[in-house]
Image (cartoon, rainbow, N blue to C red; front, side, top):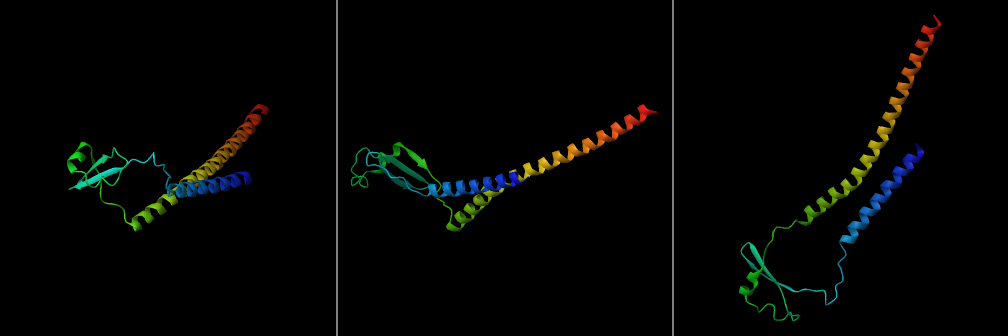
Length: 140
């Protein structure tokens, strides 16, 4: 039983460290070489955002391009973003879920082990009673 509790504590600690590491890794911005960067010029038209990948490496000429050249690829985006308070509450909910789901699973496993032990002892007691009755009937 002590081993199971130590194992449970180690699993929860590891899960918490992994959750924190993945959350901090998501906030790190990747470093890109100049060759990997693709410049994107976009123009907003009503609810649509018209975008085009620039063919040249010169970004100074991008704002002077006409919107007609941008109609080749259209992308519709949702302009409504989450407020910082909503982002914080969503992050808190996700953090709680990362702790509660694994700990709930571990507690469920421990309770199931106890249930199986209880069933086994009850079955053994019934077998003993039946064996005593069988011995009494064979003696008579």
